[in-house]
Length: 389
Image 1 (tube, one colour):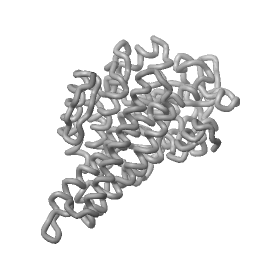
Image 2 (spheres, one colour; image 1 turned 90 degrees about the vertical axis):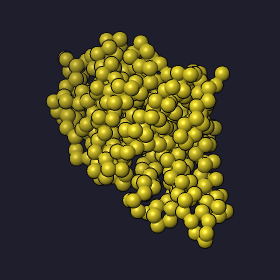
Image 3 (cartoon, rainbow, N blue to C red; image 1 turned 120 degrees about the horizontal axis):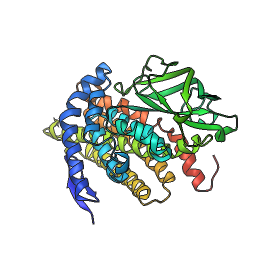
Image 4 (cartoon, rainbow, N blue to C red; image 1 turned 60 degrees about the horizontal axis):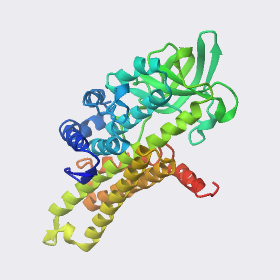
C-alpha cells in the first residue's frame, strides 16, 4: 500500500504513514532553516555545521541505518526522498548529508560490534561529521591505483600519502580512509577509520571551486599517521569492495541531490514565467517558454522515478549498482540541462546573483563529476550490457 504526501513542489507516493510524517518534517525544517540561509552562506563560504547537527538531532543523518545501530531504520527509498527535499532548499547541505552517509557506510556494514558502538552513535546523531577518503590526484576514476600506504607496525598501521577532492576535508571529525596495505592492485586496499585530530594529519587550503562554496573540499596530507590495529574496518585487502559498495549508495545520494536542485530551478522558473509579462501577457503563455518548462518538468520527474526505482531495488535486496549508475547519470545530466534552461527562462535576471538560478547553474556542474564522473557511469552501464569500455 502506498501513502500519498503532497509537498510544496511534488506529490510523492511513500511506503508508510511514518514516511509521510518524516518527509513533512524534513520539508518544514528545510523551508525554515535551510532555504533562507543558503544564499548568504554560499556567498561567504560558510560550512553549515550547525545545520548538520540539527539534522542529526532530527534523526535524518541516521535514517538509512538499522535501529540497533542507532539509526532510523528507514528504507533508502524514504531517505533519498528526504535528501531530495534538503537539496531543494540548499544543495551543499544535502551533499554533506550524502557524504556523511558514505563515511558511515563501512562502519555500519563491515565494522565490529565494538567499532560500531564506539563511533557510530555520535556520527549518526550529528555530534560528529564524517568524510570519505578514496580519491587521489592520480587516482580519481581509476580508484584502484591509489598510492596512499598503510604499513604494518607492531601497534597497527603507519599511514602516509595525500588524498584529494575530499568533501569536509579538514572539517570532518573522522574519515573512512582507503589505503594500500599491499601492492596487489585492487586486492591490496584496506579500509581504516581515521580520526580527524590524529597527529600527522593536515589539510591543504580548500579548493577554489565554481560552486557549492559551503561544502568544503580539500586535500588531506597524511605524514606518518599512526592508527591502532583496531581502526581497521573489515579484513586487510577488503577495502576496495567496501569502497565500491559505498559508491553505489553514494551515487543514489547524488542522484537525489541533483533532482532536488533541478526541482528548485524548475520551481523558480515556473514562478517567474507566471509573473513576468511581455506583450501584455505572462511569458509562460508563450509556446516557446511553455514547451521549455514542460521539458524541464519531464526531466525532473523522469530522474526522480529512476533513483526511486534504484532505491527500491536496493531495499528489496536486488542488484542495484547498474541502476544507481543510471540514476546518477540521468539525474545529474538533467540537473545541468534544467538549470541551464531555467537561467534562460529568466533571461538577464537569471544571470544575476539577485536570483538563485545562477547559483543553481554553478552547483549543477559538480554533480556530473562527483561519485564517479558521468563518463564512468556510462562505462559501468555499458559493461552491464556486455560491452567494453
